[in-house]
Image 1 (tube, rainbow, N blue to C red):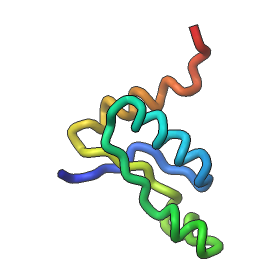
Image 2: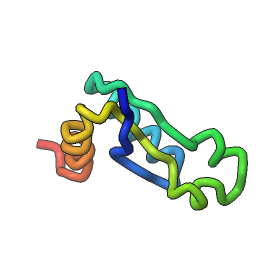
Image 3: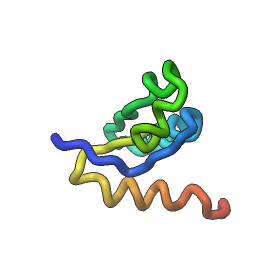
Image 4: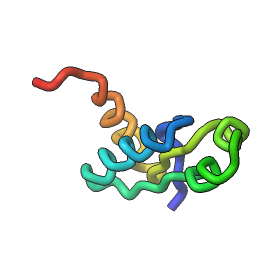
Length: 74
């Protein structure tokens, strides 16, 4: 199962918020580079941020869910 990045952030809190939303929607989620970013100053910038990843075949649906985060509640 190949994992692809659907969201990147320099903020561990923001990455975990997105991970939580995807997890609640039953997506298998992996957060890459978070621990290294927390332990080494500048690491997140060096690798392009903390990556939230899902299986490749679920990426489109995950991105659609993430895109709804800025929409006002009904």
